[in-house]
Structures are given as C-alpha cells and as structure tokens.
Amino acid sequence: MSGTELPVIAAVDGSSHGFDALDWAAREAVVRGWPLLIVHVRQLARRTDQEAQEREAGELLASAVRRVARVAPGLRPTTLAPLDFPSAALVSLSRDASLLVLGSRGLGGFRSLMLGSNSLATASMAKCPVVIVHGGRDDEEPAGAGAGGVFPDIVAGVAADESSEGVLDFAFATAAAHPGARLRIVHGWTMFSSMLSGGPVFDRDAAADAAERSLAELTAGRRARFPQVEVMKEPVNGSATRTLVTASATASLTVVGRRRGGESLGLGLSPVAHTTLTHAMGPVAVVPC
Image 1 (cartoon, rainbow, N blue to C red):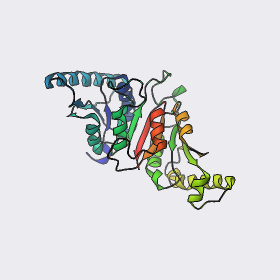
Image 2: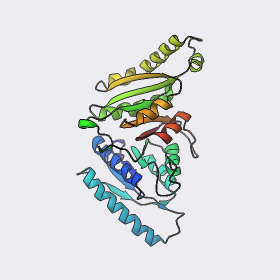
Image 3: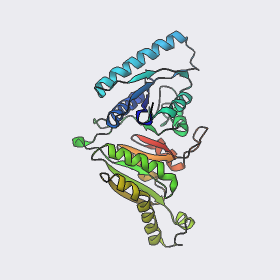
C-alpha cells in the first residue's frame, strides 16, 4: 500500500471500550478517506484450544463489521485476527498504518485501572500515532461531534522546541479534516525553562512573552498551510497537565507527543503525556516525535 492508502487500525477485544474505539476509528476513516482494518488479537497466553479461539475471533470480527455498517454506512472494513500478545501484534501492525485506535481498557485486568497495560504499551511503542479512546462519556453525541454538529476543540500539548513538530503536524491536519474544528495549542512554561533557553532571569512578564513568541514561531508555517484552521495559543505558567486533562472532557481529541524509540512499557512518555493519557476524559492521540 502507498502512504495515502495506509489504514486506520481499530483494535477490538469484545469490551465496551474496544467498541467505543471502533466507532471512533470508523468515523475518522470516513472523514480522512482512509481504509479501516479491524484487528482482534488472539492471545498466546489464553488456555483455550485454537479452534475455539478462531471461532470466537470470527464471531467478534463479524459483529464489529456489522457495527461499522451502522456507524459508517458505505465503509468496507477488512479484518485480521493474528495470534500473538496484543501489544506486540499492534506495534508490529502500526508500521503500516496511518492511525491505530484502541480502547483505554480491555476485558482483563483490574476494573479500577484507568488505563490498561496493553493500551499503555501500544501507545509507548507504536510507529504511527495512537488514539486511546476513553469510554463512558456522558453525552449522547457520537465521539467527535458536538452540539449542532460542530466539531469541538482539538487540544494539543506542545513543548517550545522541535520535539513538538510531529504533534503540531498531526493536530493541524486533524483540525483541517474536520471543518469547524478549533485548535487549542497548550504550552506549559516556567521561569526555570525560560532561563534554560536563554530567556530573562526572574522576569515573569518577559518569560511569558518569550513563551508566546515561541508558540508563534512554532505555528507560523502550519498556519500558512492550513489557513482554514482557527488557532488558539495558550501558554500556561507551570505544568500543562491540568489544562490538558480538564480540556479533554469536552475536546474531540487531545494530542500529546512521545519520544521515538521506546522499547519498554511507558518508555518515551513524558510525565505530561503519561498523566494526560491516564486521566483524560476523552480520546487522546499519542504521536511519535
């Protein structure tokens, strides 16, 4: 497949969170004009015979295809049921995907956990952007559609350096694909970070101005490429985590970055990204930077 044909992968496991993720992935595939691949990983560790696993996987995938027909009529998904450990299979498949979407928790583990281990591992190591869909939103609207059909804010958390390039590219492209979406770019700054970058010493107003200028420089080229996207720049004194988690309750998508090359659980996720991913109240995209 060429780069423009790489699919959205939706991972399903029979959980309600997995079906929420499938709905989100199907709608996004339609908006972007991308194919949809539905994946159910048959787990190596399960103590069931292979024929039973294949039968269960076939029934689950058939149910998922029927659900897509209701959510996104006209979309023709393909399906896959590899035999592997879930995060290992999804990370491998992410090499040939535009986007990987899965629920925040699956069927296993402790119900009290806000983020499952497979979701965390996949978000930490995938080669493409990963969207973790947190279930249980109170609204009746489909994820991504707000009152009156207006697409709510997309919120992006960035650092004022080149590590945010991938986050901004993804956030701007996503906002541009959804007419009416507004992009809020949040950057947490401190006096210490300002001094490290050669900024003023103990001058709060000047440090705030420097953060504003950094955001303007980061976004200038992309605003020229995507003039249709309304942009709000939000420098925040201190950690951006609280702002991102709060915004996630009403945002259509919250976007954070991670370092490339993570090879173990959680590696590559900054404290801001990890906390946002764990405590967000809506879908979160984790973008390799």
